[in-house]
Amino acid sequence: MRYILERDWEKLGPKVQGKIHLYCGTMDNYYLNNAVYLMEDFLKSSESPHYDGVVDYGDRAEHCWNGDHERPNATSRLRYHLMYVDKILQRIEKTAPKGADLTSWRY
Image (tube, rainbow, N blue to C red; front, side, top):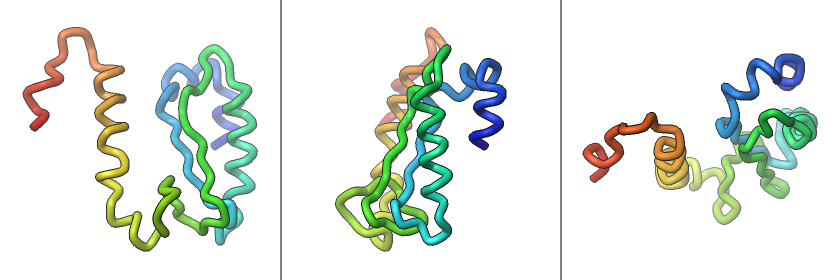
């Protein structure tokens, strides 16, 4: 994925700007943290546009770490909706077309 993004950033960058959010444990069981480090290096260097997303690591966390620095995966997995609804709503408000109804569906 990193190679494709890097190779085609001029075309893909505007489409994924603000949409890349990577969460990885530093002790991933499948060693995927190594790939995330490479992706992060590329994303930090991205320009026109800058990726404008998130790369976050869980210290000594295993595979499927999800960005919760307070709880272990076993319990934080049960609360994804609480962790990300605010971020999703902010993204919707930031990127909604002019004149879009942003209130009637919120309770």
